[in-house]
Length: 79
Image 1 (cartoon, rainbow, N blue to C red):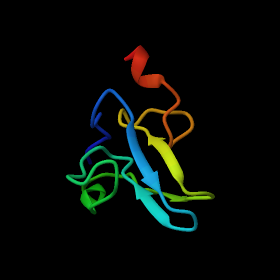
Image 2 (cartoon, rainbow, N blue to C red):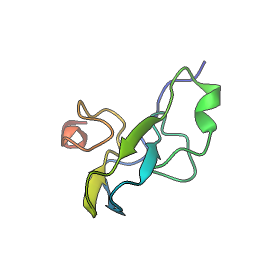
Image 3 (cartoon, one colour):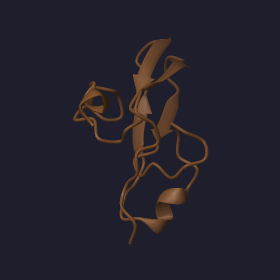
């Protein structure tokens, strides 16, 4: 099985809508970053569900190594 790969070394700023559900790609293989497109089926990983508590810009992790996934915690700056 494949392991996660870094999609990019910076976060994805995304305008989310309150109450909407988003599925963050945890494997790094999706062509629809930062969201899942089903590519994880080649790995042991699964997407993470994120439900927006308010409408605002959030920063989804691009390096796939954040301790606060699916949101960026700055880990990409140490890679």
